[in-house]
Image (cartoon, rainbow, N blue to C red; front, top):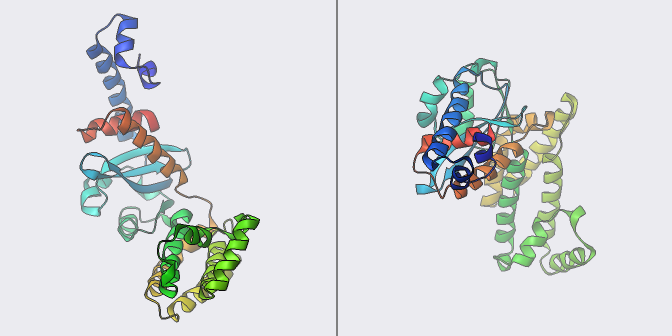
Length: 289
């Protein structure tokens, strides 16, 4: 009964097939779901952990997801995303000292939280978010250099695209854009070299040191440009240098966690929203844990 309902058969159809009431079907599903959730109390925290937040539709309440990146499953979720909100939950976690790696986006809140509650864990920056932050700030630099750029989607799409993914027509249009606004060519070339550097992985310690020197060169270039957006990006990269170095060394990222967030949104839509956070947690653990 639990598996059929979990596979998507609604309670009314199950009740007609099994000659039971809908309340009985719901009670069976709730009992098995609660049993599965109680198993988390006896489980040790995963050694390779992904931490990220997502929203609950009602009131846009934030929930923090703890994902087992090695076994590709959600370990648990907890209300809130700040340390005061998560402290009571983190204090109950078993095996926090056994965690060896935690992957997070470029969030100072989560970085401080990991350093306090997972003291032996190495923090790895999520590659997607690192590239995304760099791209956002470089597009702001392009708008400062070229006010005509504005929110022109065609031009912005060309500047955001990687060079190796451009079609012949797009390359031609990009050359026309550079001929019209020469300052954008330098921004685009800087973006390509910085993205290529951030996308490296499986690097040896010696290669990581060489990559760090290149990163410091980018930081100095951005600082000396005199542009506000470039200085902000330089500050962000300098503050996250150690975590970016771990990103080069290892291949773990939060793509698995983001995929589960997509599934959680489907769970919310299927239930037309959740009033109870505990019921939402049970459903997520049942279907994603």
